[in-house]
Image (cartoon, rainbow, N blue to C red; front, side, top):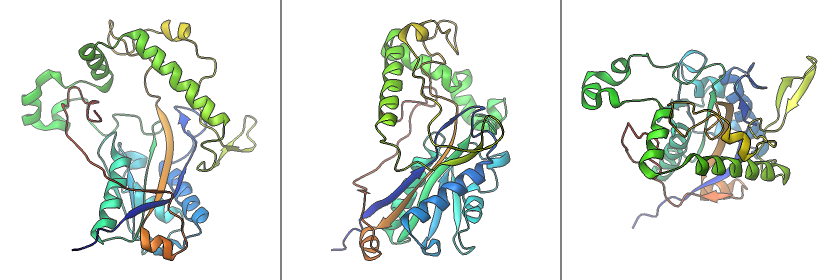
Length: 291
């Protein structure tokens, strides 16, 4: 019987999450990911030449995020030229898929040490940049013929999902408010501090500064303020700017290894892969795959 190779995570880092037009707006995506990769191996104390591959997820692979941003970031991070890199796209699950591929590669014996993560700087490469406004250009005539005009943007899908499962505006607003409160509490308790990579930015007066905290949390949010917002996508919808996911900038990376190799190198595993899976879902209700 062949023993299954166990896959572990030995280090994890991320930048603070910036909002659109916020503190990370001047950062090129490849540079932001490079900063993250360099911090990952530095904190781990790993010789980057031992990395078998760098796999990064990125949704909008166009413009500043084109031409294999994973490889460009690895070189920008100072990794040896012998370390390869590849960029994957599974839309909102792109970075998760990068992690899956890394773990699968270790299980298969193709890798012992691999870096997986992702980057998206939506300020500079907005959502939808990589596709034409005409659906048939992206989807092809056959898929377009199958679904017709039912193929809609995510925001409209969100309203369709709320209608299908009877989710009210009040419920969504309450969920959003609690999410902000939990994030604020977690930040105050320092739960994200160990993984955070400080990012050099220009301060208010143009002086050098460091970004060390997420920008999206709104301490002054109230249920009354959320209730006052207009629907963002359909006139009678329940999805608003207040209960939607933020348009964000940021990067993150994990150091993934085969357990015995990690222990041989002196690393203490922080987590292990028990299982993982992917699934297809209705492209109209496109956000239901995680269910």
